Length: 76
Image (cartoon, rainbow, N blue to C red; front, top):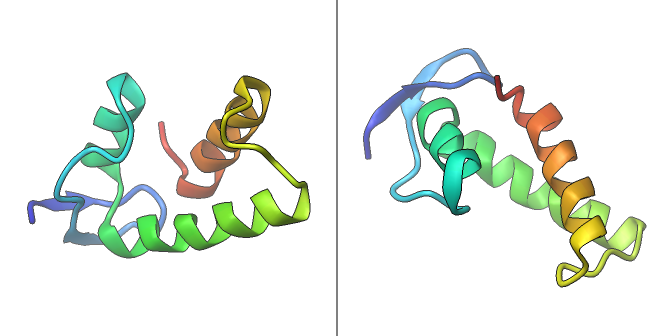
């Protein structure tokens, strides 16, 4: 695992093995997110999906989750 300067926890830690999402957002996650903060987001995402009854196949719901992920992980 490569080391990254995580934008959320502000520490230099092990990053992700591979982009969890395609495209530019996936590249940002690889460069700015440590594995621990990514795992915290996965838990948060599940909570949001349950709380708001989101459907991962709905584009509007995905846009909402992407926006929440960017805030949660403090991506630039």
